[in-house]
Image 1 (cartoon, rainbow, N blue to C red):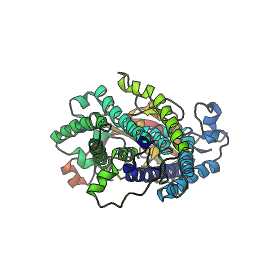
Image 2: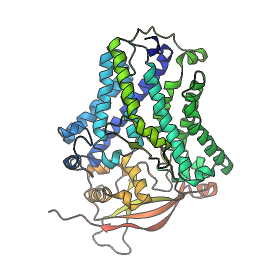
Image 3: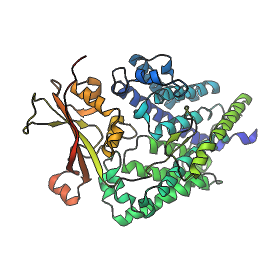
Length: 477
């Protein structure tokens, strides 16, 4: 079938697949490095306890067959090694069917992790990676030209990411409609980056232009992804540019990078070759009949499952970052339907004094990414994902977000648990566990230029109240 493939997108497919495999690699490394403290047998929210109350049909995962920390590590590192192999070109060096199996294995391994990850994996970019990874199974390799249907499905996915985010803003916080949300966003976003302070201090008139441009980027540009070339290529490039702007202004794990990757499904490689010194396109053979049948079946499945996400886009009660099926095949997305005006941070402290007095000296635990020391410039973290730091941001918004993980986290600090301390930047009690741990709630705001020059502090913080009273280590049962 001549219409089935689009050989001009060979370069777009190459970039898309290698970059997607790199994001898979990051995701598996995050899982391997953080799971013991968060989800392990002695973790804050142990997977074995979750599996006891959750049937397979609600959270399909290989861990329903067996769980141990060693087995989880094997799954995560297998995924990391396989991802690295695909980045290096292994999926293009094998037969088409073997390449599809490699992509299917990446999807299945990460699905197994996400479906037991509980609140630590409740972010929209987990489903986005899985949905993009599922479509990549059918994108083929150098043994066949890129299938048109899968390229269109990837544009459909990008459309839902961008258009859904645009609609949730217009339907949500009033500040998106009066163009003032960026007066607050850079200061109150979950994890500011090293340039967020500077973005926050841009003129308010420019912030209003940014919001208006964001509406165009999320409500107009996504529609153009489905138009003929070269308009679709221009729309894809517009997505890349706007997402890079977001990359510079904050840390959003691999969300922005994955949107950039998906934008290549709309960029025509032949057009790019006319502007850039690129190699000649390879001679791609026709797709085998069995492959065409598999792609047609996958397309029909995705279209059938798209009914509820599409209806959600049109609903006044639009859901944000929601999976309609346990395999995360077709999901709904969105971000920042509301913007916080004030930033609250939970600061965790400990002391090694046996008895508390008004003169007790408390020492602060420093986190790797979230704001703590006012003099520390927010670091660049993304596309890596610091799961504990992100949940601490939610805990600062409301104590309800701290259930059920915050108290077990504090209990592990009282034990000087090595796996938990590995998630932190510093441990103020390296020799012996603290006798007491408490948490305070502070209001944080960015300093201005004069305060920065005078104090060297990027943040100014004010105590709001006690968040968690001092607690001691529980006696062994």
